[in-house]
Length: 249
Image 1 (spheres, one colour):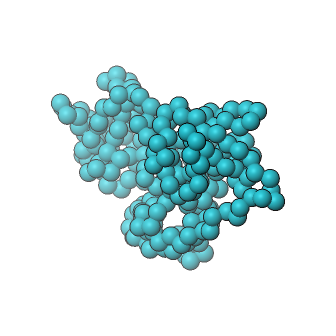
Image 2 (image 1 turned 90 degrees about the horizontal axis):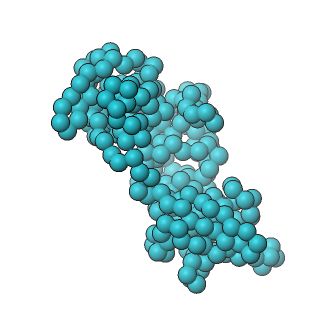
Image 3 (image 1 turned 45 degrees about the vertical axis):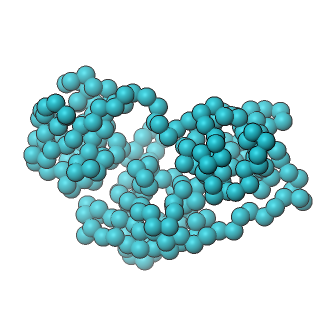
């Protein structure tokens, strides 16, 4: 199908296929007009098109659709930053989001280093990061900040913070079934895979592979809703597909 790519200055037309991914379309634009893929943001009526999904996942894109092309500087994501976590005998360099919580930082350290979450006590500039649900930016943590980690003995460790109930909605696309907004309540310690199995067991979704998107980020099946920063009232979007080590499938 033929779609229009609209920039602030002009527009041009390209042919796209129903199975063509968003990133493949960006590569076409790069070949035709020299705009680097990393500098492109494609959107339709304010909805950003996610690189790993294809046109079938966006039924709003049809013959003649106008796709807005925003060109941004090829820079690191403004919310991303590198910090250092210093242990007594080693240092870890970790990429985090400014909106990550202390708890999600501990979970990232655990994934990278296998350090038990219960044993971690984190400090920044002499202040203990003792509120797991506060964000790193609330503690004044910025690019290249150094976090000091102490390990507690297991018999003195405190219990993990209690889990919370979350009330949120899952938005399905018409490519899955009739577009619907489904209210759900789960514990914040539940994983994305447990959310998927719940939707399948309730026959809200047919048995298949799905990926979930929260705040325009692909969610990891094995990580908790809390790890992804899901809060009460948030909306999660679900599409058919999987994420592999080589990209999206």
